[in-house]
Length: 282
Image: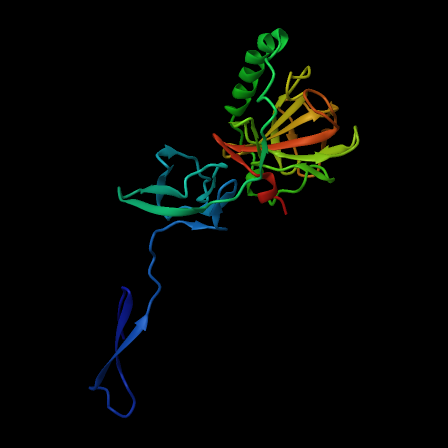
């Protein structure tokens, strides 16, 4: 029997009743390796997906930027609130070939609230202006830290349970001027309510003193440029460099920084893309 591989296999075989000298042409479908990416869920704004690169990939690029992938070919990509409706994935293979795929990113409708009689914001005070640059520098430096954490592979769990008091992507329009979209999810709860790690990770920032906006701020790296930020905490139970496990207590809900009531603000970010935490929790 001779098999020729392609979109279909051509098989030459002898059929009973015709004798061994009577070949019959039979077309048998054969699976063809396309070399395209495999992802675990549809892509959409504010979401993230896990995927597998084509066999032999040595370089992975999303929308023109290099991104890391694991030794087993698994990778993570995410799509911010206002991401375009198409993402371009490109893999360079060991033999020099390039495989490219256009990935559809579904748009989402965000909660928009119009406040036509309220001003956009008040002028920041002198203390805020003096402290804020150093705080932002600490946050930026923390997000540049890389770790070998494998938390990105896990199904994330809620760091706290309670009423959802603020949703990702919501935005207020003040007298016709758009405010900044909400970049996380808020969970209301009593001060001191335990906050747990939503996935394995390494602590990359644990504020020694409350930040002007975030209050007691804790940040955890989950690997492959994915990190969590926990704002307004009443306490922080871990320190920079600690390896935390999913479900481990890391702090407590609070009302520090600019918070109108006790709650946890949980933000997720992959590179420069902010992700909706409600889109990734189980």
